[in-house]
Length: 349
Image 1 (cartoon, rainbow, N blue to C red):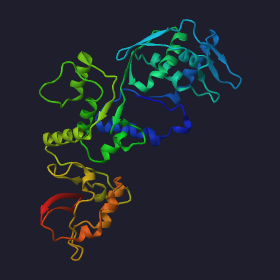
Image 2: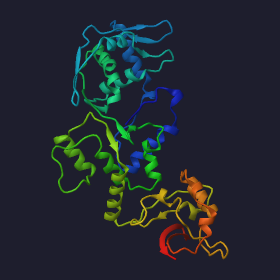
Image 3: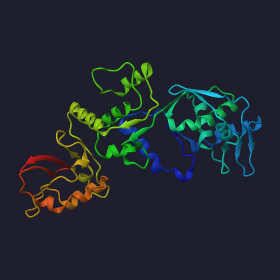
Image 4: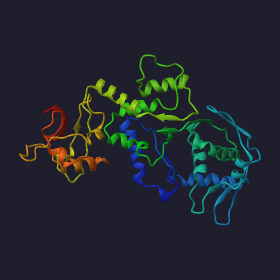
């Protein structure tokens, strides 16, 4: 795990911790963690070495920039898209490429190139939006006189036929965790994006990470075309994993630390045949006999608090009228507080 936190104005634990939370939720192990902000001395040593051999120069503001290597290759090879020519425009960007900024912090491309070399990264797999960075990083490796790694630039992930942005809720793994999806279903969904094994498993599209790794190494076929996130497929995976595990969907820690211990242990149990995720609760007809105040039945106000704390944005579609109306001939959703749980079940009135 390499944390790119060289831009101190845009880096904080608020952004970094969710990365570790996501890996933990998905059951992915991290062998080691490297924070680039803590490796300043490593980058400075290499920058000074380039200064000493004439491949870098000191700018008037104290920054260190690259002098374009004479042995810069004209072409680099990508395992997905083939040979890529280094253009005159690329060379213009390489000349004077800042390695160390005036504040002493390394730039993204310099830190990445040094880390790939120092940490023994021999195969770089990343999105096609990083193709423009490759020539810059190659210039650093050429100046150091080290062997280039292998490259594979894959298509980006699209959602609703648009490039998936960090601003989209769908881009965050925490969105799916908070919505109550099964982590194995989400991982399976991700493992099917952007590549296809040439030796396909004909029996099922369910695939665990060990099998995915085996297929990727022996017959991985990465694509340059964009992958489209189809949430219907994710929902299908989610239902299948839930059925296989024979468990209720759970969602704990809906409340904050100021609530009682029992409430902190809150979880929501959903009937898989009727509900797909917690967002489906919002807008459905509820029964809350507030006139008699049946013990243990959650109130509208309590529901709103839970929904808001769980990150729902459509709380407003629930009305008090729908909550207190009990005389319908349709199937109801009943929410009860039972000991330390919030239990959500369908029943007929």
